[in-house]
Image 1 (cartoon, rainbow, N blue to C red):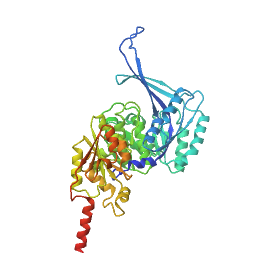
Image 2: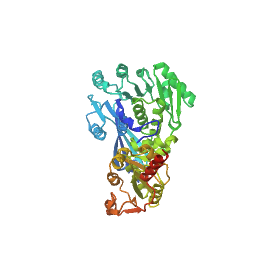
Image 3: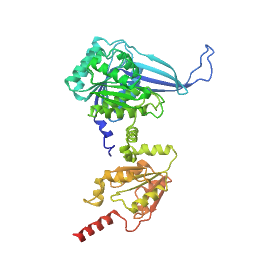
Image 4: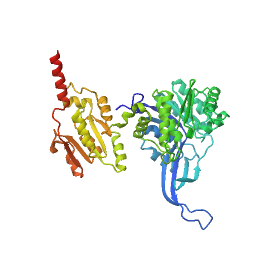
Length: 491
């Protein structure tokens, strides 16, 4: 499946990112308060649920992994319960390769947020933010030297906890330059001298104002502040995130403004990590800054609608990307076996019934149109399975299909009766039907109930199987035969 003419989301899986920075364990404690304490005039927080999530550089790594990319994560964590929880929370992200060093007396950074009625009422930080020792710095440099030849992008995720010292940052810049690697920095603090020579820096609006000493209220002021920092510290480009005003990129004399894409904002925690992750992935596979910003902006608009520090699924990003690009709007109905479950779940959560039919749909004709209309009338949402080119050749012979799979998918997607088109490579849609578990299964009249793949399973679940009567004289094979005969007569 293709994700539009400009960008293939699947290519993000090719990214190989080295992320160096502060890892944080985020704990969210949810509760209720119905009474005051007898000991003091304060509410009694009644604990209901605790959830742990990845923060800081660990969240950047997790965002990369959920999109299929690979991330080597180098950081420090303590020898404590928070470190064990952090490792456990990170473990499902199998394409993250953590290298955690330990410094005596330094705990794992833990931020605990207490939440009442969806609002944070208190945050407790347990951490040490002093600079690392010279011995730890040397150990990190040695670890970095071993892995840097195997990556295509370097990210510095600085949360000001003391890991990214000026010496370590400049060592990384030199190593990246020696291996011809771009360096993206998520900065912290007012002094950007330690980031000198970076490829791209991503401050938020407040950080940009503090580092430049300039106003940042308007587009022009933001650009001027970025250019000042770039010139002062030999930085090639900047992307400034500006909350409700979106983001602004400055690169090689060009300026890109992107409005925010968030439909609603639930929690901005970790949104900066998401921006960094998607910028890094896109740039690491050779995309332009403009394209990388588009992708990061879409991702940020999605993640702020989730609770806590969160990651995104490829399905969510693919769908949002298509929705934001009118030239790929017809592709919005295109899916594949990886995503079709998400489509179906979304509809089922809305209480909608699901129908399924399938075929080669090589040369679309009246019989196809009426079959699809018949099928759509029996359900709220219709999923159409379509044989891949390889599958059609096996079923119909080496001269078929006439139209390739992309063409056939897009033609079906343009029809009002069709809600989703999914490509399958098997000879039958048995696996696809099992994945979707439709409420209705619809086939053409050239089938009988005992020859319809998936019918017994659908009926056993209480679903329905309908057969649409064949319309005589309408078939792709017949159209091709008539066209060949006409050609022979003309010749």
